[in-house]
Image 1 (cartoon, one colour):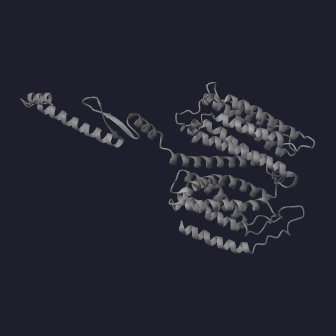
Image 2 (tube, one colour):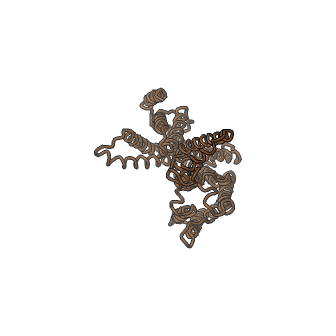
Image 3 (cartoon, helix red, strand yellow):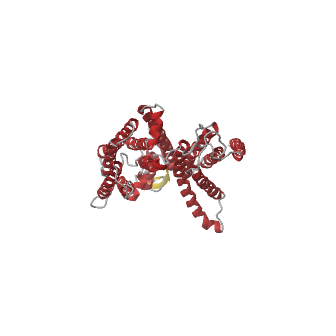
Length: 482
């Protein structure tokens, strides 16, 4: 690890030297454009690669390892920090394509400040200072370290989207509104899929503690999102267009259906209850988006596939609740053994989010001009969704195997608590049948082995006494005396 950090540090020094000589002039950018015509050079591709590895892979994995207090948390975060610093200098040392002032460059300083703030809080906690004023401050530092660490993957996702938009020169002037709608809505679908995966694999215990059903939270989110869409999809004071009407009506059905879902999520006695409203809303949204009018044939086909994908996500959610779970929260008592069918709704939501983010007007024109068919484009996007779904499952697996004991151990422990305490069982005397002392599970095994050895000895003594005259009488008398 030390050697690797040294190599990365040397690379940072080289990149810093190039960054000082980097010309930030924009004279070679054509009038009316935001990027120059040169291609992305090797240094910029290295910047993109190192930042994706650092902020897209290592920091989220390190966050999970930090939550479970793994010894790998610090090494992973150190490696991610080294790559992030290297990537930052590479971003200022590239040649090739030039960029006008942009949101990616403006937000990079905030992201790096968040990263260094997280590092500082982590170093303070590693010092284990707890005397005097440190004892009062430490608990707030722990909370701050956790909050910043959990916000960092979200901020990293936003910055990576900004980077892609900036590299291609998209989302300016009249295209800004459509870009915002596609990237915000697409990210929301991906986030919804991640939350469903989290609740499916590791969130059932938390859900039971809240006393609410999953559909209660889903319906609250759908209601809030519908209210926002109702009043933001049309520029008030300007003429209504077909897309404005469709988007606004979609917002209306979301908050109307969301209110129904909230109401149906509780039984008469206040107990949580499952319902199908969120799945139905997702299905209707997909149907509406599949018929969304588009200017390019390629765009129409991509939007149609997006609609079909989200319709399938809603349909599989309905089937999951009504037929797979039969209105239960989980198939197993502890929720650790979900059905393979339950993986479909979250994955399809992630795929629909990637499809929607990749269906802006500028992207569709770029793909169409490059001669790429809709089949190839959709397959590439689905591949990205599979990789995202894989990474989410890997992170949740890291959390599950490090934060909770195995189901068999949990059952044994709960059985032990019922008999005499955590990890203990109450033994019974083989001769009297009355409860004996409380022993640990390891002691119980040793006691059982000793008793079996004792019984074997008694049996051998009885067998020997049958062949020796005069032995049975004294033995019986001694047994009566005992």
